[in-house]
Amino acid sequence: MKNTALFSIVLLVFFCCGLPGIAQAEQVSLHQALQAALEDRPLVQAQAAEQAAAAANQAAAVSRYLPRLSLSEQFYATNEPGGSLFISLNQQQMKLSPTADTYNDPPSRKDFETRLTLSQSLFNTDNLFQSKRAAVLSEAAVANARQGQAGAAMTVIEAYLDVQQSAADINRATTALREAEEVLNMARQRTEVGTGLKAETLRAQTRVNDAQLGLLTAQHAQQLARHRLAFSMGRREGEVDIAGPLRLIDLPVPTDHDRLQRGDLQALRLQSREAQLATRQTRATFLPQADLQASYIMHDETTPFGNDADAWSVMAGLRWEFFDGFERSHRQASATARHKAATARSEEQARQARLALITVRLQAEQAQLAVIMATTARQAAEEARQITLNRYEAGLASLTDLLAVQSELEHARHALIAAETGQIKARAMTHFQQGTLLDALFISEGEDSL
Image (tube, rainbow, N blue to C red; front, side, top):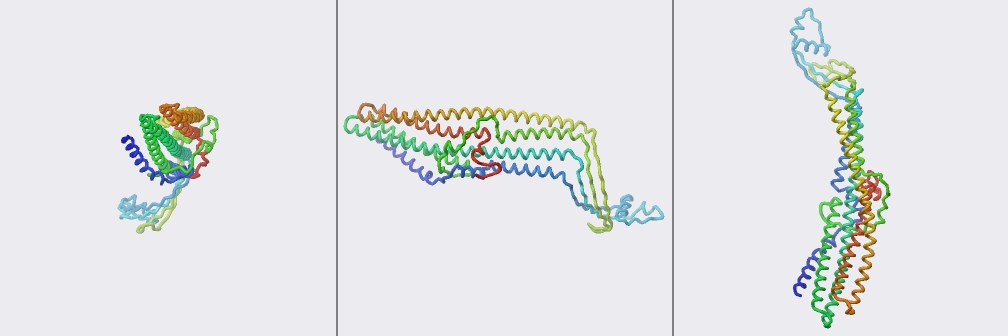
């Protein structure tokens, strides 16, 4: 008897030590938790940065259509006959000589050349396909970021429901402890009046100890669930409690169709399209390239950026490479294989997603039936406990019978809590697998908050 009392005191100390952490936890609504996750989760931030990088790459690819303007300054000194002659011509200082000695053995000359050059591509298939591929990859990055938001939202919902279930488990464990203490008091009273056995009191005390341990376990589970909720919101540490329960009616019923709107599947399809464009780009490399270049040139003998003489030039060119050692053919074969791999990967992921959708739909149906059955079982267990309790008080039932029905009631309550939570999770997961979770939560595309 002393050992059981000591055990109860130890459990009470641990239980009380855990209370401050629970009482001081911050409370957030589901929308606040989702908003924090979409803003603070590192994974969501990383995918948003990847989306920005893809958009910048698209802009860079489009900029290839624009002209290029460059400025260069070169210094040149020589006494080579040809170079000296050209310097004289460029600086417009050429003087005719009656003999060739001046040209054959010229003095050393210096030249500062300032050149402003404008280059414009007239026809280049690489520019065309690079801009198309960059646009497709940018769209794929948007789809991936959208899927990342959906994944973060699903993680928050699961963590939120875990906290919600842990709170219900604490209420259940508290009720179980109160009922166990009620049975213990009755067993003690019967022992005192001589109608009960001491063994029954000890068994009732053991049931109280088990109920205290169950309450402590539920409390610790709640603390862990709150830590997980804080982590899902993007926080490094701490606990977060829920401001209110998430109900099944808070999530709309998923539309029963086989069209998947998941961002990851859309991204894979776009990556396959980008690989197809890469294949077309390698084929187009057999076509010629044309460009235009215009320059304004200044020459000066002594001063950089000087202007002793100036000139201009315009040049248009066409380049057509007929043979490159089969390099382009090999690159085309590589791009074709990459396109085939991307297409197969997209199809494989789509098939797995369809199977996952079938699975969660069956789980949702099972969860709905589980709630109905668990509700009925709890009602029956509560009624059985009350009847057995009345019989025990009247001396018509044993303590063993009462503890048995009480254990069944505890199991039924736990099963109902788990079934109700599972039903909400199953509906949310159905939305997630269909790609409609963000729409169900009223999170529009491109928004980071609700």
